[in-house]
Image (cartoon, rainbow, N blue to C red; front, side):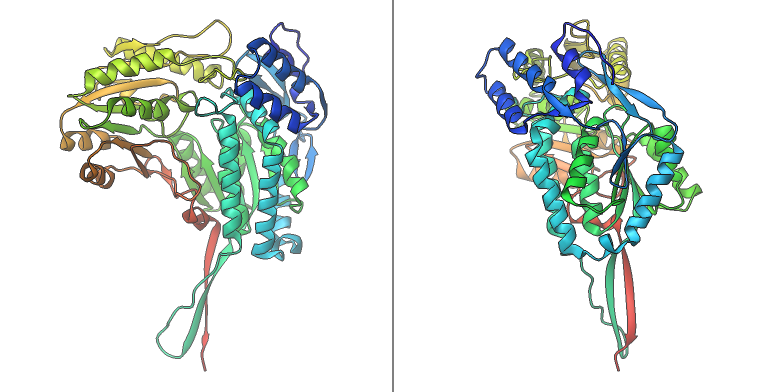
Length: 541
């Protein structure tokens, strides 16, 4: 663990976080909730958070989690984890390479064949998932604080969204799939002649899962929930940018009582550990959330190895369409959620905002006003609506895209620059008069940059909205149910939100059309890729 001297409160408690655990989850939760509800001054609030982070007991949260043990990497290599709000190193985490993946995969295969896992049945898996959800709730303050420290998103959901929100959604996802675990069943199938046929839905085996940095805890829940409910065992690689909350969850997995090897969590890079998972001959599936370019590489690796099953949740350039009958203020509020949630680092971000020409000017003015009023700053300040971008790479990419928008002729009406001189903070940015062929209208930015385009007819906007290689999500704001139904049918996207945005209920299937991915996560459909269907046929007399 790295010790650093800094006058910044965030830097001081960051350096201690990886080697110390909260002395009291209840105390941390109570204090932070008090802060979130404005019961203390900003200075006192920050000091209280600092004290609660510093006064922690020793834990092991920087090692690899394999076979229910925390172990160093075989190579001994580590990599730094950065606090995006301060640009300071939080700690060093063990780096998984091919040899570590091999050990984890072996543990997952042994666990899959073990009676300790196979014989507990659906009810046993149900109980373990519910126990894990209980532990998420018990340790929610610590998990949310780690998420905000490492990822940069606001802690409190007082302003509509924060790490607390992700924790609640993660718990609901785990409980949702706990409910499915004892309801996975086959059918009896009528056959011609005197034969009896039935089907079995069986776990496909040990699987690899690679999760992104933008929603570390929630993506962990989306992946683990269906896999464990189905009876699979897992080797999961977290993003090298945000490994800390998943390592904390590893302690909870062990405490919940999952047998050794059922869940293995590795920290590492995509080109090493990620590729090793995708190519591994002893994994039967890989699930990936991330960029389209990397998704294409994973398909290649899967094909070149054992033709493992692949599910992909990839990039997007999602259109949000505001019709002329929409309430403009409501539409702007929906667009703010659709674009600025999680610092704009969201695969379904409504980054192509089509507004009808009759309400266009009013919408642009209000969107610029609301974006300029957003509070950017310390993730642990209850007033903060937007924290830093996850790292310098993403920060520089976003600023580059903003410059590209300016140079290609888009009209900047809000933001457009860095906030402060330390931390990866970008001002909420709004461009008007954006054209379809501009870079900011075609390429995924993954940041707080709103692009507003004008349209005049439904036929026109459908054609323009669908003129993208992506098809992850879309949105419509209208009072006309007929228009809503038509657009929902004609838009080529896996999810269409009408008069809302970013509803991620665990029961609703989620996935993309076109280059936005293969397969579905969440909902009953999320189980499909973790199950094999076996037909059993015998004479009936």
